[in-house]
Image (cartoon, rainbow, N blue to C red; front, top):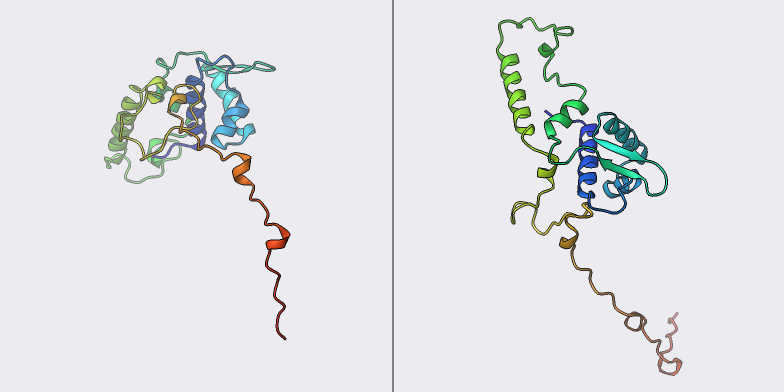
Length: 188
């Protein structure tokens, strides 16, 4: 099973909002779009749906942005995925209207996949948005990779910036004209 891009982006937006809960100014659609490299107009549509679900509040204008309406510890992945995924039909026989399988009634595939999907949601119903933002144990993530998109919780983990050389180190002094070697003419 593969989640749609819509669900992926919805989860990213919710996680970003949860990570910014302590900020003076809430995150904006533009900020989230820039942080994730996602189309602003696409995220605007997602924000409208998330607001309609009652998960975020949107405020326009100066000082506006997106805020979680439901605490991150109360919003589960299962709830979000059930609302944002439009087609949970893993195989044709899940939908009685479009089912043309001649093995329907004799095959155990439908029941097996239904149990697997139920297990999938049982796990996701036990994971909250807050759980997704908890720091990972050392050695769990890719080596040397630090979160760079979460603005608040992980700010203390930011990599130290390399010191830039000052202007005197950058500029190379030109050789005086008298010490330059003259160009040799080509023999011809």
